[in-house]
Image (tube, rainbow, N blue to C red):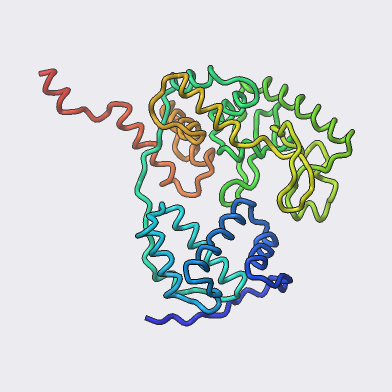
Length: 338
């Protein structure tokens, strides 16, 4: 079935200034303030799509070529469902935002569905064993993620203004889905977090004395208040110990702590604790949710703390609890008890 392209109805975008297609793609991504990781991924998939079809221009291709490329990813390269969705999103963005063509026929395409995965969860004793083997900033960050249920990047991107230690509250800004939410600051972390702010302030003070560029701030804020990135309120709670060059602007500034530091520290602690099950930083979030439900917290509260838009996403943790709690008895146990 032939699906003719339809010109995009989006009229709120300024004309692209770049001449080359991939430069136009990069320009539009940055105009819409997508993350650097998204920019890199969309550019990579667009290049792959063009090369797959013998370096033809996307404007000369359509449904058949997109379907052929996505089918190749599924059947030949056997990419994961999430990777397939990312490639599809990249092509949709390329056609809609750069070429100016909607692809309504995409809705008719068969898309792979992700298998339902049961999250890996640590017991309370296992969490204690892992955290006892982590020290310093990475140890504090691991405790914070387990104690609040925040995602890794949510914790790393915390600003000073988001931390309200007297009220024991943390505001998570622009989380997944662009939503803000509030989580509790564990009482036991009030003093360590105050000490972390003191360390961060010393770094901020040194940067100001050296007249370093301010930290990165949201684009709209940066345009309205160009010096906001130099203020204490917008400084990172977990700043990187070194300066780095911003890959987009070329400005040398201080970034937040890099995620690889915590990932490496956690992996080492898990190994030292003798835990064989798969554990990642996200496992701390899974364990937070499971342990709250295990302690009697209602599922709607857990949903809000995790920032899930649909309670069905949170429900997966109840399945873990049902089996772990032993509410369903194995017939073998009944047989041997007879």
